[in-house]
Image (cartoon, rainbow over all chains, first blue to last red; front, side):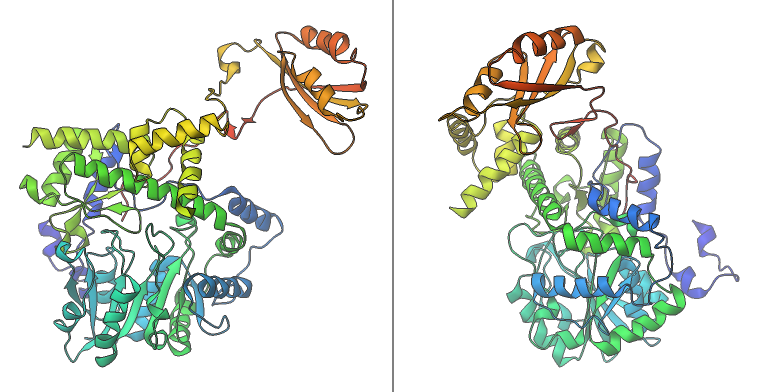
Length: 392
Length: 167
């Protein structure tokens, strides 16, 4: 611990200001033990459907091993535009308004580097994916946390935004359906944000990687709201909906000036996303919708099972309407999330992620991914039940 | 109504994947009541939508020589009025016949037979099947190895290759 506080002259001050990931410790703990049931995995439990894998193999056999254009295969960009238009009613031009990235993660980095000057503030809506805050810092910006809370089902309100605005506020980044809370924003709830965002002329980085994984209503894209497309960078990708995490293929869609600025960063740092993954992504969009629907159906069933089971064993859990995470409150146990998660894995061998790693607002919650088999979920619930009994 | 039909389809998917899931668990998964699940299953059984709840057994693991399976292409002369149905029924009533399909293409019926030995299957083909009046010819293919059966891959189940904790 003390080592990290001593300035290392070989490293930049920026990188030294970024703390190590809070998840790392749990990963190491869980990896070192036998027989752990993990609810800590932030990715689908499905293997990429075979038609997609086969398409990638066939493309390798035919010799598709070269660079693609910086923005990505044109056919893929066209297909992404068709998909965004038909699924979310947002229209983009494949020539200038789309860039294929190495996962939505790269898209976050490109967006922030394209828009930030040193000292610009970015509103980071928490709890959120662990990369937003550090990536803002790496891009020279200043992250300003906006806390959503369980009282509002972890939804974002205009008042929460308003209270954090300064004259340096340049942009806001949020993710709905949300990792780790599973909360979504309806069309009406998003529309309520448009006014404050327009009034303060904010750019919006809307991470919609879980857009396909909603269980009660269809997803609304922030960019589809009147007037919002021009100030929104929509980020998404193939990892979650099409079970393609390891392929690392995502995309950003937005107005030409922003996307072309992102392409500039992308071409000098990444050149292009790997062609093999782009070919696979194309196959998923063309022939993967039915497989996707079956996966969504299965997540919904497991969501229902997990939420009800948490209630039954006495953990209060709001109903997550999207993504594949339940985010129950552990406040009633009197433990901190970190203490709870650590004891749970040591005593009952169930791995969960303590909520504080996703931001302060998650400090009394644990993130439980239900992207695992129903048998594993049943066992995990039994073990958590035993754990709660023991610590009454 | 639409919702109800979708839920029924989902319920069938769940049972097809694992017919031993309890009504309680299924009710939770589908966000409905246990009574509703029980009633729907009873209804589907009565309507013969759900026909049976068999186990898929990998017999090779029990005893390598236990059973021989053959697929037989059968050419037949269809009969007036009853077409292929009559001869199909005469064939599928034999207990050693596992399945019978009417096919398009080079032959008419595809018949799957299970026997204890190759000789037993051969005997069935020559003495029972070929002896039927309508049967013109048979071609027998013995199955050497089952890789996938009724949608289930028999060897090497895919294990979880993910890391245990990821953001």
